[in-house]
Image (cartoon, rainbow, N blue to C red; front, side, top):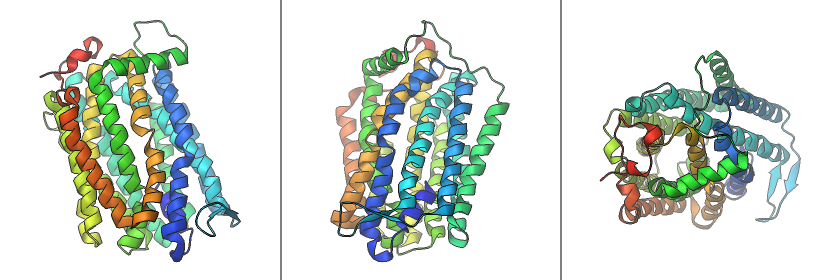
Length: 413
């Protein structure tokens, strides 16, 4: 994603980056919208009826192949221009057009991978340790991502773009090796006979509808992710035009600091006793996300932007840990993949629309206006959640609770 956002932004001369570049980034987000949404509808049902280990190995292999195709596209980099409607003279380089289906494939495989992975964690971790385990798992992933992001930023500065793609290729190969060496029974514990994929997908959405607190969480994530996407899809443009830094290493540094903030959030929240007050904590962290984006819009030096980005990165890291642990502790194994998948449909379905809206909003009010408006909207939304989402506000669980017996009673005073 770092390579793609940076290369698409700088595929245009400086005079057109705030217009052509913004729209091209918006199209990049849209390219994965329908494939990702369609996959999310069935990913959980597949995870709840398949051996989750074999499923993860298969989809990671496909993702590895897609990134290899991206490397080939960057090597040949056809320079033909494809004219499109929009601002006068708007076009897409042909190599960018080829990026769209490749990126869609990567996001589809990630969408298939996540429910299977997140549903596998309770197989090896006691319920009482889920918070710390999820925090450490995702903190390790975030540290690896931060190191990879810095490496990509350096390579984008001193080498060819295809050299930067070597970083995700290495990480995906390492993932495949780890999955092949995994010696844990990740088959699904079912109490009901398997049905068709469509029927099981519908059952997952029905379960989510009955759990009002999880439904409110999904609605909140839908809106927060939309508004976050409005701002973050323009991050490369924010660094290049608002902060005035055109070297790839600076964009890599900004995204790496955000990732390190996420790793810190993963570890920090895992060491706190968040379980009885999970819902309130997620609402408070949402407000913090909004205020951080506001801060980015208010500063114009990278030395102030970096600490703000760090704080911003902590918020979703903490929210993710609380959410994953709550679902893993309160949802039966045979439903868990579908709940994660149904949440993804709800919480991520508007992300591509947010990315497209970010391009249009940036055209209308500029980069600073985009960050100020998106940040204020998230902060106001968080305050509104505390008032309107009573079930989410009361959401909590006892660390020793058995997920097989959990249900709506997981909402505690």
